[in-house]
Length: 279
Image 1 (cartoon, one colour):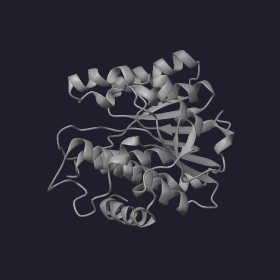
Image 2: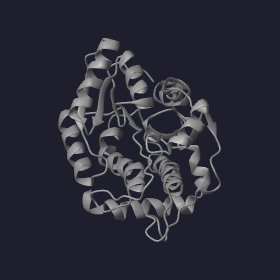
Image 3: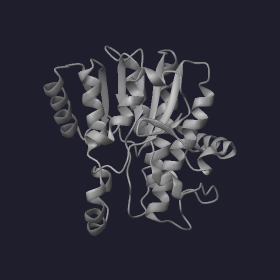
Image 4: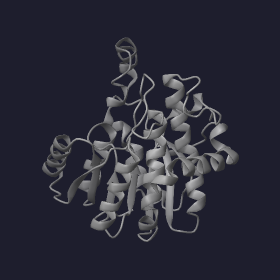
């Protein structure tokens, strides 16, 4: 996809693979917008991108992905400023090691990793469809293979674990992509997701220091981890591919649970219920 002068929105772009992706898209002439919760960090990232690429069409906008109200306000402001959106990259993610809740009272990993991109995408979906051809890309993880959706206790109120919560949220990303691609069929808007690899990013900041030290020799650099996101954003090879899970720039089969249409349908309806008041 030719991204020069195309409007690209990315979450989680102030560090790690999101930042590398943002720099690459800016280098190719995209009009880049990224979200941030910290104005100072946003301004610093903006200036770094402009300085390294020479592209001055870079903007940051405030959005707290742990708040439905903040996501709504952001989407409204975005639609006032921009009449089109060609690439949406849902890259922001967290991995809480202790059970926390968002400002809406929802378990944090589920809220930020799944419900936030679900709500943001749906609020911007008409704009994206009107901008077709367009692409929606969501960062998942191979961790999804360790999970299945616990619809009876999806927030882990009765039983919660850090890895279980995170893995479930990443499974949600794949099921969300599957259902979204079906909804977008024949619209010239594709929806795909990916596993970037075990990347040395701030995602693991809360990890036990011993485990981080143990894993660090096997972690990819953000430059390598960003390759598949960038591929899905710009490659002509995937212009007609939708609803797939990618690893190392190739379509890979996710877990059996991630292929269940019944779960994809049920999760979509549940997510609508969660975000109903916010839409």
